[in-house]
Amino acid sequence: MPRQPITQRKIAEHVQRLGELYPPITLDSVDRTIKNPTVVAASYGHVIDYLARVELEVDRNVLELLCLLPDVDDTNKTFYADVWQPQEIQHGLILDRLQQDLGRTAAEPHLEVSFKIKILGALANLSPIQDVAKLLYFLTGASTERQAVLAYNQINGGMVELGESAIAETIITPIKQQEPGHFAFYQMSATAMIQDGVLKPWQLYLARVLREKSYNLVGTNAMDRYKADMGRVVADLGLDADLEGYAREIGRLEARLLWANRNGMDFPPYILKALRESVDLYTERTLREAA
Ligand SMILES: [Fe+2]
Ligand SMILES: [Fe+2]
Image 1 (cartoon, protein in one colour):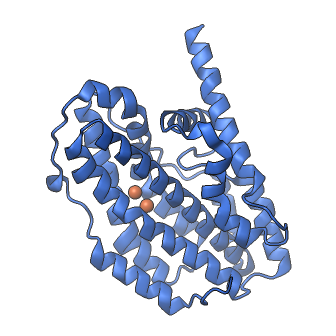
Image 2 (cartoon, helix red, strand yellow; image 1 turned 120 degrees about the vertical axis):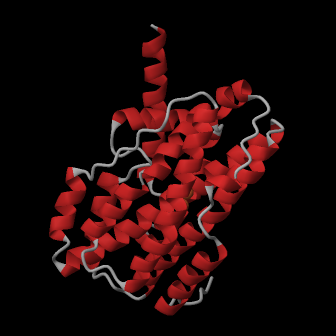
């Protein structure tokens, strides 16, 4: 299927439009009515805890970006400073207040940049490595934003079903409207790099190796306890009934961009592996706690 080329100008316009269309959601705009907090907490408490923490970790994501892309360009700077960070931090604050309204403890975001990122960041002072880091950064952004879109869709449906219209209409719907624009930014940015042939074959090879070795589901921070938490999110949202379908949803873009040499790959195998690992860690933890 022929695709329109993605120009840097198109990306810059997209960023500007997102800033104009979606001002950060204010805490005051939220209707804090909860009809049945016990039921909401039982069905979605853990998922809301998880998402609140991940959204609040945006400040670490900005530090990672500055580490990985020391020569960050204006479009990327405008995106993270004027659009993305201000929107995500409000998602975090609003969800954090919701979880406390549900009687749960406040989120504890993990704000320390990992050693792995610092190493890659040090190497990114070499411009060919920075280009590899940039593609990985865009692919990570696209994959995590896609996971956010899917999670908020599921939660919204659930809240409507429970009759929790204030949560659905004044929290989840406004948040979920902002996530697809983030996904589109990363998708366009990664696609433009591949389409323009920015990376030489050895750089693409390196990107594949690093991606395969370091792929993480949203918010797991390469740590087992967060992976187990994510396993429970997957289970609570009912996504474990079709892990392959979910892997396809979140892995389609990078299958196309990074693994075009592997004909017929729907999603990279490491994505399904990460999902299975998370679900297994959650199951093991549940069994351990029950013993
Ligand atoms: Fe968000
Ligand atoms: Fe987002």
